[in-house]
Image 1 (cartoon, rainbow, N blue to C red):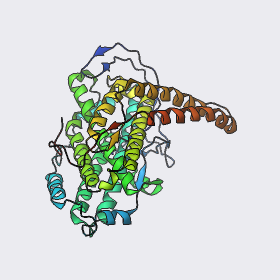
Image 2 (cartoon, rainbow, N blue to C red; image 1 turned 90 degrees about the horizontal axis):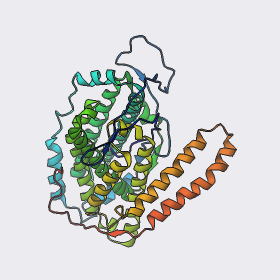
Image 3 (cartoon, rainbow, N blue to C red; image 1 turned 90 degrees about the vertical axis):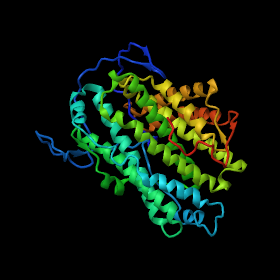
Image 4 (cartoon, helix red, strand yellow; image 1 turned 180 degrees about the horizontal axis):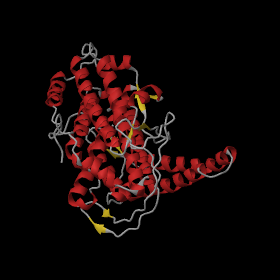
Length: 407
């Protein structure tokens, strides 16, 4: 679930000197040294020599913060019961299972001394926003681990093949989360994932919504990772931390996960072949796309720090994800229509005003009154984007090249 990146407010504006890269405008910047701080879920103890067991940090919750999910597991068991659902193609799932068992990235996530050295060199605003990037990314991956692990456990008797795939996907997500958390240790921080498991509120999604949202999350995660990897390969001067060197193989885990959810959707044609499916498909596309765009525009300093123009990067990712999604969803948004981007940009402006009110010194009642017209305006823009003429698409059959590694 790599796509669920969280809110990070830009800490400062960087001076820029644009040059061109393959996808985006790259940016040069100057940084100033600032003192880092982190909120702690428990009272933190101060140590002159921070060790590996560093302070555990708590993530500030917001509407766009990565969430933990649960679902109707009884319904899931019914959907994957081979005696009830005759659309389940067990041979296809067996082929996917063998793909996951191969475990291409078993020895990929191996750290070296470059990590700590790069972290020690990172200073100022870039250091702080990079820490927050690691925190949110780790939480998103861990969220996927928890959901997939429970699905693997609950479906073991009903459909052992599908259950094992879910278990192997939870292996991938745990590996990603652990790698990111190890990255935090380079900054003398760590997330207490066990505490998060118990303390976090879980959002309930019906199974079909899990399919829509998770497919999109995995595929958009693929396009984010591969795009950042390609950009930094062509612009190595922005390679500020070695984790990005792992993105080429890493994103293939996201791609395989997305292909599996595509197979799950194909096995449930009732989620793809009627007018309600078209409405829900567009709804989840819009939810994921708007969340990513607003999220990233609030943390544009991170993208500037690695030489990317945030909006150009996001639109590239949205367009490629939308084209991929059109292979299976019955309808998708017309994200290549210039009006769609204009609506996103207006949402960004409105959202910035809402956040500014939250940070003001007004009393809560005044803040809420000031937010009302802005929330209404934001809702109006979202609804207008949803009502734009969609792109009819989708097929319950895979294209010939799916599932395969995509570069």
